[in-house]
Image (tube, rainbow, N blue to C red; front, top):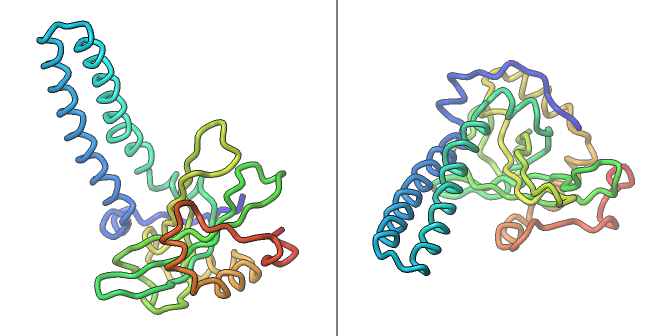
Length: 218
């Protein structure tokens, strides 16, 4: 797995990294849902009927799940150094510009076990700030692919491209990240960048058939 070794600028990342903002919103939402479900569970326990107690226990279990998703998991994910050192370096480009932000499209290998056949996909992400880059269609944006999947799945089920620029102000770091990504990947991404809207509307990630890939990516 390809990674980039660089010094994460913590103050900079805390100010501009939208991944952290997303995690904070997740924490707030999960907390609200957890409190609501606990309140409902207490009300059902007061009812005292068998069905009410069973439903209340289910709600408590769901509330615990919300607490994990909103508190425990984000705390792990918000370790900025691990985010950038433990996830793969991938290419992305600005594929659309809007009045209040832009869309970037990343090229990611969804296959977890790299001894198996690759499954390349176009992964979109909307964002609002991109320090160190021009917000212009075609601009190259090296990212890390923050991934997640169930233990049984051979493929990454959730992918979030996170720009290196959200953790580094040094232009040399950004240039080094761009150079570390193969020309083949940049060319494939440039060829398919116009499919940004299609990728956003796709229920899953928009995968590319092997026939559309150069030999070194198959």
